[in-house]
Image 1: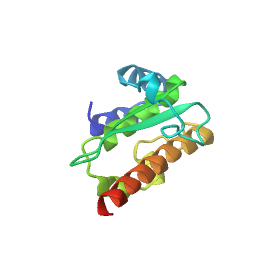
Image 2: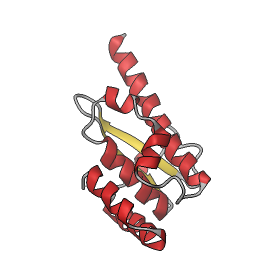
Image 3: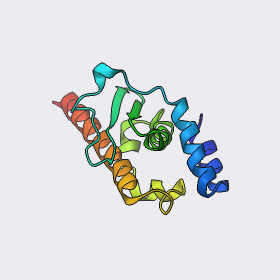
Image 4: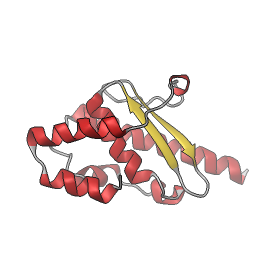
Length: 137
């Protein structure tokens, strides 16, 4: 599923329809294998236990996300769709708040859920930066 389709769908839905859509998106997520659910991949700052795993960086980034909360899992699936297929520099330039506004979630999800989404992006950027720095060394 591509990001533009997700964004368009979210913009035409409201209230409980949007929540139901996020739950449906969670079902499309590949998730993360249990053995990769560790402190390195954990998204700290999220209200529920959630994870982000970078599967590939070069030449294009591919991630998987997972959460014990189906709503958060759906929200993180949107991040998967947004990030996958971009290069590391494109991802490092993401503005978390603008992305949340772009998908129309700013006033829909709780501040804790928004913080978790922001924390996922921050963790992704941290992992990408560390990987890029290790390649330059």
